[in-house]
Every structure is written in C-alpha cells, then in structure tokens.
Image 1 (cartoon, rainbow, N blue to C red):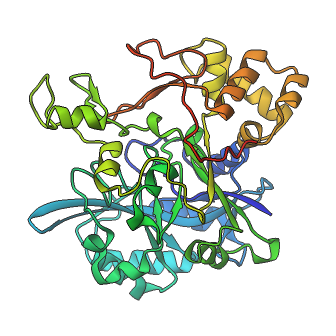
Image 2: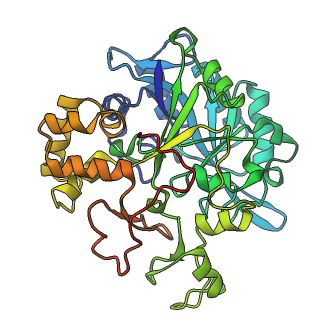
Length: 430
C-alpha cells in the first residue's frame, strides 16, 4: 500500500498559522492533496490536544482517523518544539520534531513537560529552555518509543546546522544522546543532493515535510512509502526510518530548494541577494547597510561539505521536485494571485475530474491530461516542472524564491537559465 506522509505541519494554535487549520479541514485537504498519513501537529497545546481526543479515534496501530470520515486519511501524533538555551557562550536555537506512539504517550509527555514548568499554552510550538541533549533524555524516560528528528536542519535561525545559532556537528548538539537520532529533516531550502555532499550525514535517513502553516501548503514536501496493509503502524514507520529500509521508503517529494526562504544569503530590507561565492567576496558584509548578511543554506552546506556537487550515494531513497498545482495554473493563466477564484475554480475542477493534486503532478500521463481537455498551457507547465525546465530566482533572508515555469520571473534582473537535473540524478518521472 502506497503511503504519502507529511509528518511536520501546524495547527491554528501556532503563531502565524491559519485559523482554518482544524482537524476536519486537515482531513479534507489531505485528501485533496493526496496525503494519506498526516500529523495532527502541535500536540503539546492543551486545547488542541483536547480537540484531538474528542474528534479522533484510534486505529489500534498508533494512527488515528477523524470520527465519521471516509477520506482514507490517517493521523499520527508529531509536533515541533523550539529549544533556546546557552551552550559554549553562544545562544542556541534548535527546532526538533517529536514523534509519539499514541495519545496516551502524548498526554503523559505533556504532563511531564507541565510539571517542569514549561509554558505549553502560549503557542502550538512552545519554547523550552532545555538543551537538545537533555530533552532527548527526558523524552526517552517518558516513553522509549518517543522519537526525535531535528527539523529543517539548515535554516539559519532555528536549526541544528543554522548559521545563526546552530552547530557544526550533530554530536556537538546531542552529546551522548546522539545514538537516538536516526533521521534528519532537510527543510524547504535544501534537497537530498545538497545533503549528500556532507559525508557526516551518511548515517541518517533524510525526510521531507511541508512545515505547513496553511491548508494549501500541506504536502508541498512529503515522504512516500510502500507498506503492507497488515504492517501499517507507527512501529513499522519508525522501523523503516531507523533501518533505512529503502525498499519501503521509496522517495521524498521536494520543494525546489531555490524556492525556499533561506537558500541564498542576503538582506531582504537592502534587497541584496548573494550566492556563497559572492558572500565570501564581500566578507559576509552587506554592501548596502554594512552589517553581517543572513547566511543561508547553500553557504552552510558549502562550509560543511566534503564532496563535489555531483555525488550520488548508492543507498538512499530517490526524490522528486515539484511545484504546487495552483502555482502552475496561475502562471499558465497569467494570474498573479494563486489564491484567486479564477485559479481555484480550475484547480478544484481538475481535482474533481482527475484525482488528487500529487497524483496529477507525479503519476498522471501527460497524454491523459491532454485528452481530459485540460488547458494546454497547464499541461505544458506540468511537463516543464517534471523536466525541470524552469527559470529560478533563489530565495534569501526570509524571502521565498521565484520560479518561472514559462519565462523568467518578472522582477528578475538576470535569468539563472533553465534548471538542469544534476549530473548522475535519475529523473523519477521517467
């Protein structure tokens, strides 16, 4: 059975998140997107976890379903936590994803955090003043089945390898608890080939998730598994990740990393964006305001990489880079706002006639799209994305990158040209 899992997103109780992020809406949009294993997220928040307890029912395998729903969407309990603390005379800010085996373990975990004086009411992604190392020990003492995976590991401000507050090595962060870390989340601004360049990451399986703050962004990154129906469980999911079972973990669904908000370096207020070589040439200083640049993911990868860009490991899951369907429709129709009624009408018509968004983007033959009388520009856009024939203006300092599916983005001074699949990468669309 094919499982497409998005294991990191948020509820309406996290800051800067849509009020539409309710369980019924998550269930509905997961079905629209083609996600059949979705995290409930934010499980430390007392109001949200009460809603989960009231609205979900257990399947007896560590997963849950929305009561009365026939969507085929399963829910898993994971959450993101923020750790801010001082170590080696530097303030560290690292985010972790926490996996829990069931609701009972979640409630016990929350009671322990509450007893330690952590404020779980303020935000769906609370800040805990404890080191990552001590947190892993705490979590394992609550329930040994609780697992921790570092989140968006390259993001400058809040991550394991972040340029502003992270570490240069995993053991520097987790110390003697490093043995419990078996997977890493790559984040929107990096993809597997970038991470493969760092040999220190070889022992860890790489996962990708949406980190969605709204319904429409669910599934923009995800993980694709093949799991026998009679083995579908929390235990089997964790086993696949721990054992790096690439016969069961097929591939990840990826953002184009250049579209991520921290791919390149720069200053958004100064409208300065640099690639790593330009940053080095300017000695990490903004030429406009003369202050240090926000160093992005590409630069940090270059700092820690010990392999060339074309290195392809023999034993890793594959990946597919995608652009969301509504973005393709908007550019095909030459509409600036992807959320406009005109775009969304076409989007929902396609979903109703052709299936889920991910199925349309990944699996549906182009000939079938053409025969279904989909606008030829939309078909051409899907083809361009599959073939990675795109014009890309990388993101930086919190600004999303721009991707031109047909032509270079309007505000781009110099076109970066059409993207080419890295040498050695096998296109999973063929």
